Length: 452
Image: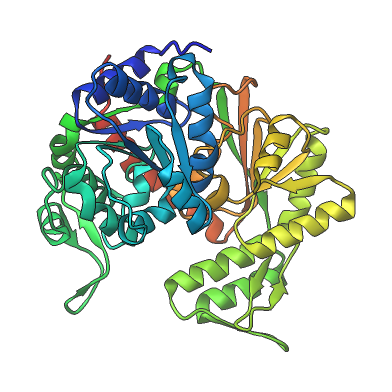
């Protein structure tokens, strides 16, 4: 197949060619993988500027998406690639292959840099999902920074650059430009653009951006950054987002309120405690979904309200495929038990085979976890309706998971994203928090959006 770039894709290809350091903040489904490969092919075989490329990506994306794109397009037939995943022996063998592009999952980056014994001689690096380098304290960040001076060209790709706010951008851009734009030290970045928010004496737990921080940060990074939203440039299907409310009865609500108020819930068999706000949030989310882990690891069942709602939704689908997103392990177990009980065939999307079966329309109900299906997978061929059984606080995982079916190539004219929300619980706060974070996300995208 011949790759015929959209105008916005050609713009990004030219941007990568003309900028040794570039950040491509394109929305999900806009073909970031293919346009980056076209730029690599040009740099390697037309400009002769690079010889060896390292692509760092989520595991499934490294194993499936990048190789599939290389083999898909006629212009890329000459590119040789090697997938550096699997056991240490398999990774060593892959590094010894004579290739143009080496594709490694981000979990093995530290191994490559510090333990493999191979000389780091890649003159170009592509970071697929730059947002996975948002922590300046992470091992993968520190490992890449050790070899960053050796890299002549670097590209950062993501659709969610600041999923948790502007603080994320420091590490993401330091790994790109070694601190040229936002500074070399997190302390200086905080001092320049933020003020302390929640504190306990001299200990600062959170920061708030200064009134002009967004504008100043966007101005600093604008010369190496382009961004576009899919809805602006693609003939995308209509996206419908809705809530399916469920309500706790008096006894269930009392249990929930007790946990919320006292941070402890006692019953005859289990003791369930929440030692801090983060733990409490997790406990309340579990209870809203219908079950909660005790301190001993046992599962205490609270209600079946969301399971009943899911059953109603499946019935209303009239045998059309449905993707169900779960968060906790006991969510999956209880959903599977209910589907078995009512005779609905289902499968977890966690293998290459299951993903292929979904896209071929062979799975009526697919169960997915955002952490495993959140980045890079193309699932739009299997269906156009998604139900969130449990909601995640992570804007990045939320947006990326939705983008598995709401993307270019979706054949349905309408994509429906339904959220089963337990009313008067933390579910409602999580949705509001996602919307609030999206304000920052949207501001960043808009501020550096390329004008064609």
